[in-house]
Amino acid sequence: MSAKAIQAKDLHEKMEQGIFLLDVRNPEDYADWKIEGKKVRSINIPYFDFLDENEEIYRPLPADEEIVVICAKGGSAQMVADMLVEKGYEASYLEQGMNEWSQFYHPVTVMEDDALKLIQVNRLAKGCLSYMVISGEEALVVDPGRHIEEYLTLAQKEDIAIKYVLDTHLHADHISGGRELAQKSGAVYYISSGEMQGSDRPYEPLEKQGLLQVGSAEVKILAVPTPGHTPGSVSVLVNDQYLLSGDTIFVGGLGRPDLGGKAAEWAQALYDTVFTTIASLRDDVLVLPTHYADLSEISEAGYIGAQLGEIRRNNEVMRTVDRELFTEKVAHSVGATPPNYEEIVEVNRGTLEVTAEKATELEIGPNRCALHHG
Amino acid sequence: MNVDVFVDAKGLACPMPIVKAKKAVDAMESGQIMQVESTDKGSVNDFQSWVRANHHELLKMEEDAGVYRIFVRKG
Image (cartoon, rainbow over all chains, first blue to last red; front, side):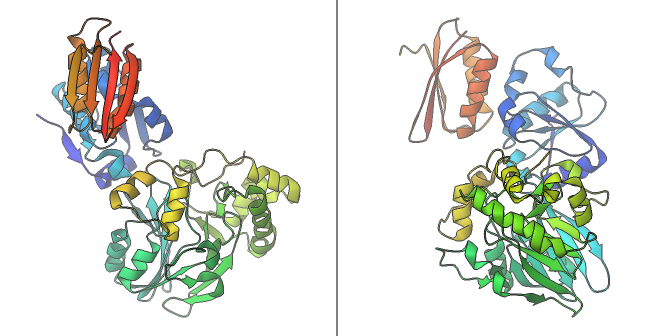
């Protein structure tokens, strides 16, 4: 008997219930990037260890529950899962491995009333979040990932037309689906012109667009320039209540200012954003960022977001009014850069074309755009 | 380099290159040298971990037009 293949969607459902994962990739790969969840237990035993007739290595595996085997592309996970089934374990494997997992998107409704529905689309493997702001029969999509069929399907399900698509900034850790989604859905594509220098792609300059109208007049979308992560970063304020903050403010801290090679300069801009632009926003504004870095950032309701007041309270750097100290803190504690970020920026700017296969390769790995300050 | 055993894993996807190499190594004497050829980029990293975990010695790795040549001395 051979083990059953499952898809990323099935795996996610199992993860919500609680699941045991056996990751059979290299220890280095596992340490660098793995599937995580609040109810996920996982261990790493490389697939080649199973080639030895050594009963010892089966010892950490639970005999009385399902085990899902994970590898990079599915092949070695299938082999190990088959071996487990042979030995009487209940095992399945993620059919196309981390490759498939990195392309899985999960939509969660953040809020819904008569005038407005806000959906957060979570690309779990990357920690990338995008949004659909729906009112009446129209929608705005913010920071869509490269797999635009996810948003087209969602639009169909919600029975709305995508009217606007925008990128809060030029992303460095994932390839944007913004321009392509706008093209496919006949929407207007916005991004700040400061981000698109050297590009010959068509777009509408976001910084010139104060107010966007989506659906009923009650939904007000304000583009707020919030430089710091990049010079042209813009946040989106919906109905004075929801701040789609891009990479500027996260639940766990602030955006890194170093990816343009001008960390100190951009940190100054981030300072002004925090202590001037954002300072005027109320504590009860809900911050909905484009990334998260830790599972603890997922709220009880299942989405990633936190009230501005809470973020101010929990992050010392948000209260570091001393400009010099602030700059020091955000510019010098950035950690590893996102893999391949220079190429990804070029793809997003339109100065480099890549195949879908190459795009998948560039995006492999975890997100590293969210900064964490102790 | 004097190669004792040659393993052709070209065109095979993970996990087959390691599976074939493992079979070949099992039949070798300690100190003998195996040459593996693989076209699976992902298996290159796996070879490094596998060799280390099994106390063999990775002598050399080279790439030529998408073919990875891996030389391993059995430990």
